[in-house]
Length: 157
Image 1 (tube, rainbow, N blue to C red):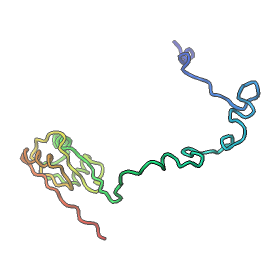
Image 2: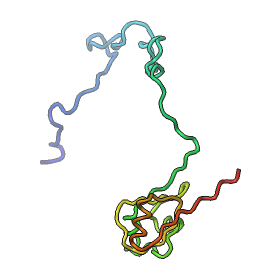
Image 3: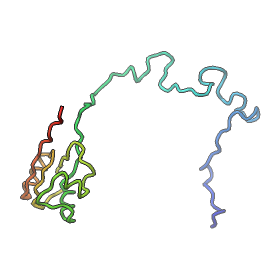
Image 4: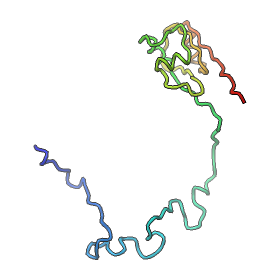
């Protein structure tokens, strides 16, 4: 087999329809657009327009609410912290948010770091972060460590 012998499977490719190329093509003159009207012109964008009827997306009721000032936490699991302790990238005696960012466990702090209980921790780690789940606190204390939740300083208003 050579490069010049390669070809697609039959039916895998299809030639594009070239409209407006004479009467013999079947799509000549008006190119399948019909006579006059908005859709026969170029530059038409009428998605969602229903000819003056109230569009479907406006007829349906609005639901939910997005809190504009919600907190976004960087989330980290206990199993990942244990992995980084085992690799020697984290010191189990004092794990702070800055240490987690420096070691590369999380990329950035955002509004703080929240620890969740996925995975197991065996090291006696002393962790201080902005947030933690109850299960994570219990798991760290069960391993002989301590997980303290430090409240972020309120932004100056």
